[in-house]
Amino acid sequence: MNTMNRNVNNTNSSKLNSVFYAQTYHPIQAGSIDGTDILPHDNAVYRALLCSSAGLYDPFGDPNVIGEDPYCTVFVGHLSQLTTEDTLRKAMSKYGTVKNLRLVRHIVTGASQGYAFVEFESEREMQRAYEKAHHSVIDDSEIIVDYNRQQLMPGWIPRRLGGGLGGKKESGQLRFGGRERPFRAPLRPIPLDDLKRLGIPPPPEGHYMSRFEVPSPPRKKRTSVNRDREERHTKSSSRHERKRSSSRDHIYEETKEGYGSKKRSNYSHEHERRSSSRNYEYDERDSHKHDRSSTSTSIGYDDDHHHRSDTRRSRSGDREHRSHKRHRHE
Image (cartoon, rainbow, N blue to C red):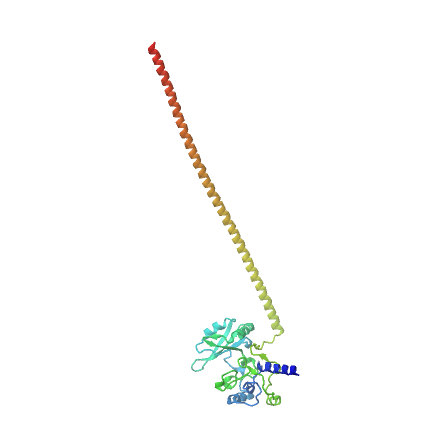
């Protein structure tokens, strides 16, 4: 029994710490912290309810809507008044190729209203910006990023007509169910009959998420034509990637071989230069030795020749002297 109570308490506590997000928009539900209100609690909610029931707002009839594909468009809010189109484009280009961009400005003064719509080239780039650009900083202002609820969320009513999401408590127009302020888990039983009678969608049961999880934006329905096109695009991109990698490898091998042959040619050239210099040194040494030996030999030969000639002259002189003495004696 204690174990069962403990499990129930753990389930309730985990449920209390969980949140859930709205898939469709209803003004009364958006004004409730847990999505269970059945009456409008302020004039803005009442005005949004009138617009919704009378069908006064057409999200696809806005002439200022940019782009052709809402699945590739993100909403960027909490922008600084100093942020311009160029600054925002540069900041959002980190996540993909920006195709279109519209910074909403005041119709009279031209001042920034603090939010913009950015369309990317592909849905994958939009998903990347949706996940990574949320709570990033642009011009010292922490921005929020959400998908294009104006065209993708059924029943959407903008803030100027009393709807929207988020907001501040001090403004008296605080809205729940979005990414920035999700619904809390209901603290009281959900009045399903009253919600059904008033046409308010009930909060989802059993589909709670941690507040640290990233809710998934709506995705484009894949038709057979789009699926085949994506498969062909994936195959062509992978084929191009293989070609690029093979060309890179080929260039690397050529560069490596050229570098090795260059090293070998430089080495052989250096070796030939050193050997020729050594041979030149040896030739110089040998020639120097030969010159020295020949010089010494020639000098010795000349000395010996002079010595022998002097000796012969002295001997012939002695003979002449002796013959002269003998002649005188006779």
